[in-house]
Image (cartoon, rainbow, N blue to C red; front, side, top):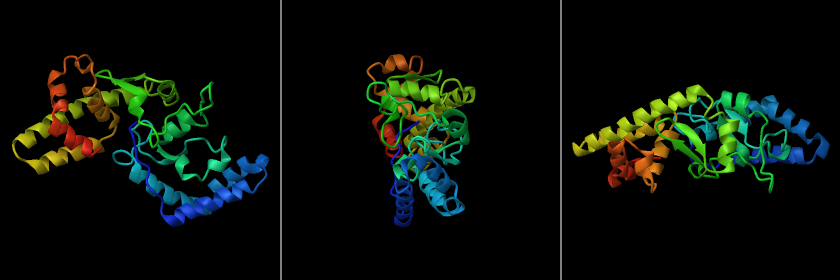
Length: 252
């Protein structure tokens, strides 16, 4: 999971969403859940409104339409961050929509939406509002997550970030290719092949599991970076290079 910037919807799509929200609000509170479900599954909504939402979400997604939760699977589903069964008035709220793979959406998250006991605030992270790096630390090189906050712990549990073997193994591979990428950038730059260096950066961020690359740069600036990158002194040296950091982070 990496930080994402939410885009602005086209005016016509935004207007349609507002209209459907009004339709739900005008129904009796006891009927809103059923009304929201009916409108969301309506054929007109599927053909027009949801198509516009998917276009906007895929433009925001990491890599090539990756899931905004696991960063690995292809984002195929419009996920309601706060489930429509729990918050029907947010069914057509653009700020409540994220792109998810079918596994995260249907197998892991479903209608789960844990809240803090203290104030009822959401425990899941919305990467368009919060930086996951403040809540989750990727333990290199084993590539499992450690929670830094209650929100980080909830994400690890709900999305199975450490129990889905394919994700952990995928991150280990991503860690290896990310190390190769920073080395290739350094070689290309030293040779004056700046187009090649730019291509290395583009490909690195477009790979699945870009959270690994983001974590590497973040942790390289940590006071305990020498311990976090134990045995990876060369990689740490690359990541601390000012020009390399500027090139990669500007494209993130």
